[in-house]
Image 1 (cartoon, chains in turn cyan, blue):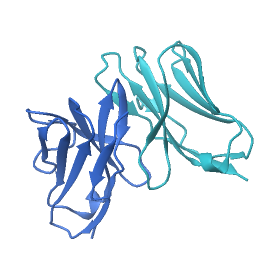
Image 2 (image 1 turned 90 degrees about the vertical axis):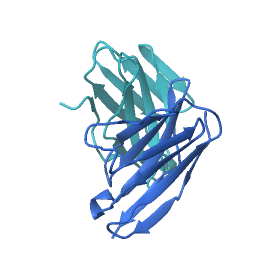
Image 3 (image 1 turned 135 degrees about the vertical axis):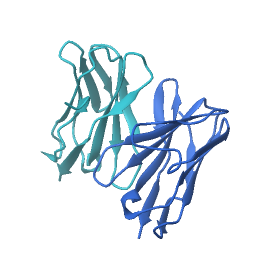
Image 4 (image 1 turned 180 degrees about the vertical axis):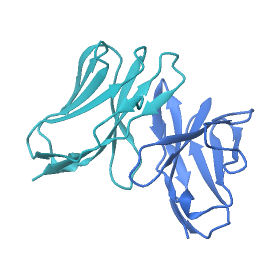
Amino acid sequence: QKEVEQNSGPLSVPEGAIASLNCTYSDRGSQSFFWYRQYSGKSPELIMFIYSNGDKEDGRFTAQLNKASQYVSLLIRDSQPSDSATYLCAVRNNAGNMLTFGGGTRLMVKP
Amino acid sequence: SAVISQKPSRDICQRGTSLTIQCQVDSQVTMMFWYRQQPGQSLTLIATANQGSEATYESGFVIDKFPISRPNLTFSTLTVSNMSPEDSSIYLCSVEVTGIRFFGSGTQLSVL
């Protein structure tokens, strides 16, 4: 079992819809969680991070963390074609010395 | 955040040659990280470079193949040695600031 798992997609949503991206992790003691966006041919850029259970909102983006169920989600409201990219989930371990990336989910937002 | 300059941005190299990738950060950082991203794949950590000590390599990566220098707190280089077509990837430099990892623009390497 991979330590950080994401559905590779592609996840296709119509413009204006909510895109929901999910990530599960195996290390129950993980402390911090990150979402990166990576456009084709570009490097990853940080969208959000979350440390505590619950929701964290930033503009059209909401990160949701459920430590009991060991999953973290990213919701993108009012999806735009410019949101089409691969979204990488990253999880920091309990000791804080290792950051593990998931395989990424490719999101396609269709006009 | 951090501004990370990486060069070259891309290169096409012949089998058996070596390429050195440079990474410059706009602030002093303790650790710098080198990643590889093969086509269609996620990020794989190659090694962690601390200033003044040998780099720490992840399983599957060795110093002879990927020598790293870290001469000061703002600069590092990664060399891909004796290249083969399997080394064709994107190589990314990364630093961590207040617990958040930031990435350089990457080096797209193609080996013929």
